[in-house]
Length: 257
Image (tube, rainbow, N blue to C red; front, top):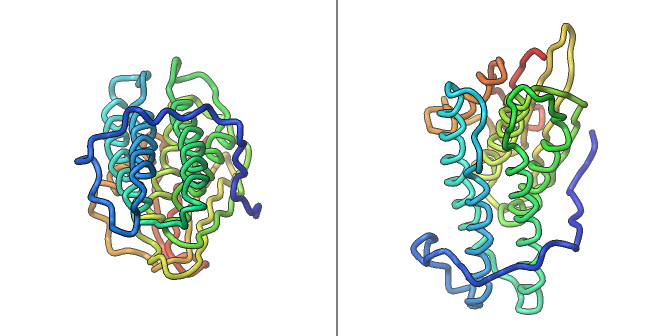
């Protein structure tokens, strides 16, 4: 497997910190973070991500728009929780300015990856692996430091799908990585999240996201589970959850090309 923690190009657009979200949008920051400028910039970072969670154009058939809308709302909620965790992270004053600028750069690139999923034609053929790589690696680069020493492993085969199925595949991968970041680790030790996209016999493909965290969760009942099932349904696949060989949770979606 390829080990990846994606390098970030330093040539990001200049940040604008003039329109932070209202203070009510986030929980009150802990006393360990004193720099109000850092807090304002964090909230601007969140606004960038939330704006990109609501696609400018949904595209595609009306029957699929409900799952796109449900996924966008759930993704926004997950991003809010993850940014709140960033709010609880403290740095030395020498590092804070550099770190928040780097976070904003990564957030801009993650937002660009989400926007790239917008469709002008749902049947246009789109390459999957590069977008899946960008979304998962940028999610990890932005949020893994607030969870603990979590690394990412990627093993992604080349795959071309109609745009609506590519969108479902990438959003499914993002949802499963978000779930692992939110629920699989306690922040006290190092860990691993692995994402693989592999081909099998008779045109079968498999997307697997696994971790070495707490292990399989109880039977899934929450909104994230319906999102996972809905995205898998758009792919024409089914989802199976089991204990990972890494020791945590493994979620697999098998589907036909």
